[in-house]
Image (tube, rainbow, N blue to C red; front, side):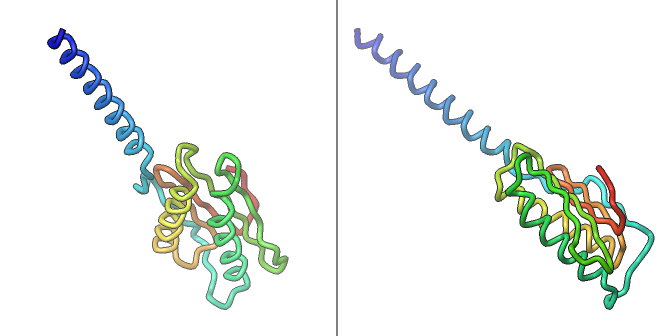
Length: 140
């Protein structure tokens, strides 16, 4: 009988270890991937005093704040300033947490502005998120 109890104990330990490993694998699988896929820049530019800069700041800030709170992590917007409209869109992988979506968008924004400074349009596509702005309306 004692030998039988040992087998049951080992089987229970193996089952518990397997469950723990599966849980850890699941958590590791959902880590945000901020590897850059593509960054595209509009050839047109703007200067620092241009009203478009204010509109752009509004649009990108709102994309970062609102996209992680939206159903399906998908958000379009437009600046409220009629003298120089800016249009934006951002989205995150549905498997991300809200926090990971925010992190991914922050990385995407930084990469976009570092690669495309003072451009009237740009797009940053990372593995787990994307952010885009333009001086004209668009539909991704």
